[in-house]
Length: 184
Image 1: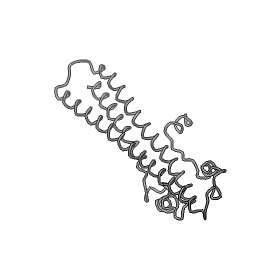
Image 2: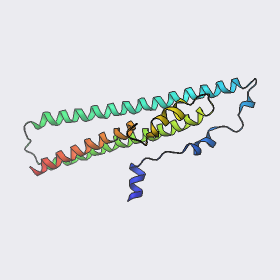
Image 3: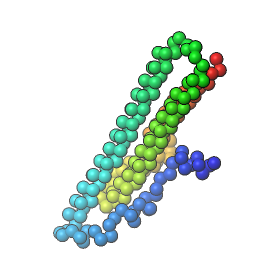
Image 4: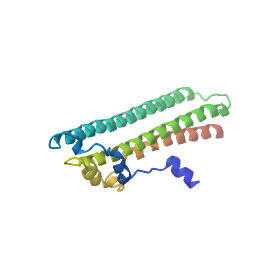
């Protein structure tokens, strides 16, 4: 069971030493460019800027996804509140089907956030390898180290770890509401 838990709910990052040998094309190095190597450095810098922008876009998509699901669940709570002011006379067991749909939706939200976290984790590891060829390493050697690499919660608590609790909280609330409606 622990293998299942880690596989679907755990977090694992790829070490930079695994990424490093796979990033650089062995046939393209500073010698492949004419001149004093400035053209090669310019190419590395351009690829770095493009890749950093791609990582930022993944973060923006993650934010949009969270906004969508948060709005959807807020609307669901508004609908429940509107229709529940006069307790329905029908069997509360009829709520089982909407409950399953809501929990599946919360599960999809959870796994989307997890997927975005994994994708960005890999992107920032690649950014770290790209920074090895640049004069400065603002993300990998400076910012990430200053934040304790996400291991020290007093310095930094990775946002996506917190974001994953939101769909779980909604699912738990839906389940508790169903249990309360059946128990009454």
